[in-house]
Length: 209
Image (cartoon, rainbow, N blue to C red; front, top):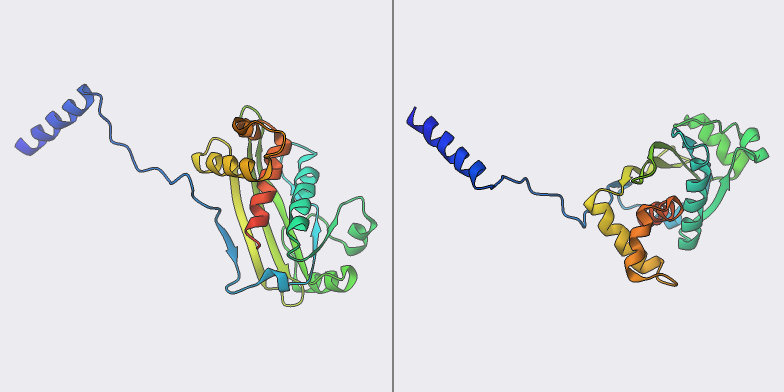
């Protein structure tokens, strides 16, 4: 009984003095979480084919925009040869890519033969929220068409209200968007879907080096 009364007294003092118990926050420098086959050097993959991402968002243009941004960033890295295929491309229909989130060993073997692909980079947009905040979720996989082995994967949501994401946006802006921008205008990234998509694509490409 005495211990209980003492606990109530201490709790009351905390509330009266305006103090609060705060849980430790995740460090703002927290990196992306992704999978990479142990010891795998992705530069040895060869030729990668990337179909346009499957779009589960309400924005009909988002799949094309993010696919284009990701292709541009990966081509800058020159980690592997990359060929991007869109639904309007005859190769899409001929290869029967569809909008699958996974492919069988037989399909991968056919892609290798028909598309001359050593690996397939595919995935989907799982989440999207525009203004007043930018929030995009992606789930991607890089699979070896010869063995069916998962070489690399990421399942991530980039939310501009997250402290860790904001810190990485600032770093990205200073490194990649320096020309023609005031140093403090990195905050525009959180309001510009185009720059935000570029930021996401840049981060993904960084995990493949």
